[in-house]
View (cartoon, each protein chain N blue to C red):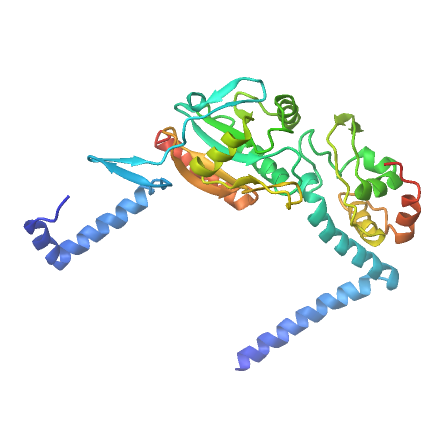
Length: 146
Length: 215
């Protein structure tokens, strides 16, 4: 019994330590929102995108283009925000290599969901673009050409 | 083999029985159990006849005829997919590329992917797909044929589900199974081609099958 209590105290202690570290490391609301977007974005990414683009964002051969290290993605954020929802067809060049397979958009995605996925893919794989807000998505979606 | 009177009397002695048990355990440790043989079996005379892949003839990404003779004396891994599928096929193809890489140095191992959407997946499209995956046609055949013959061989020979279903997001339902076929055309393993651990097991089983000459 005594042993059990000691173990319990140790577990609670360690847990507190973790909460403490994370709590102190983040600086208020902005980061909480970022964390939420990022975490939600990761889930949505794994639901809608990673089948083809892979969990590690490396794509597959010349069939599915990579997202991790992709000059195509770095070039035009607004265009990427559009294609997630409205899809893309025809040839595109990513890192000097031609890809040509239609990607159907996920039309059911809300602006918030697009923002969350974008926050995930633009802050992962050595990218550090910060939060992509709903307002960025709404603005971009007004000018989509696909 | 029948139990004779003498054998029964041998087993009756506890020490002898113990010795026999140890022998069996020893055998298990030194020699792996062979892979199972799937499907129905029949006894014809004294021979057991196992389920085999029925004769087939399809066309691959190079417009070459692919049939049972292509896989004569070969071990192969078969699956069913279609190029426009966005659900499980991309994962299956990622995993099949792993099998392709793992069997690079094994000239007696081939891969066979059947499209279940032959109307859309033409030879030219399959050719482009294979090329984009960066794989050699002589080791990995992407085949197309009549829809009926593909669905039939999927269901009756490979025990894999493949059919049209307009209510599905991409219009088809099919299993993500990878099937390991031995040099005699018998199914020796079934794996979920969407799961990395299962495909690891497949790669191990290919090596096991090769260690017994593929039969």
